[in-house]
Image: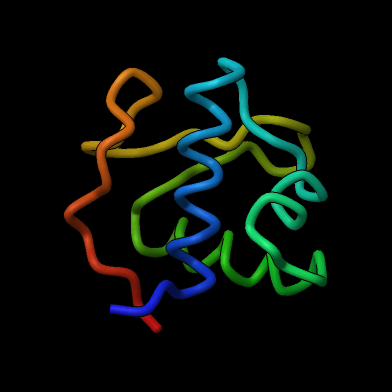
Length: 84
């Protein structure tokens, strides 16, 4: 199964939080998930939020949090399916 941009982004966020203890910035997400545009990253962030996989506080840096069965101490992939 090929990786989608959303899966790459979620994997990057999961690993970044596990490594650093806090969430990446939007530009770090672009770099880490090979996304060329912050608007594309924003689209996938909203998709991940709508799918119940992440949450964040609007207009505040580094507030992205993993939701549900994914946590920094358990970097195993989520069983939820991303919309494409």
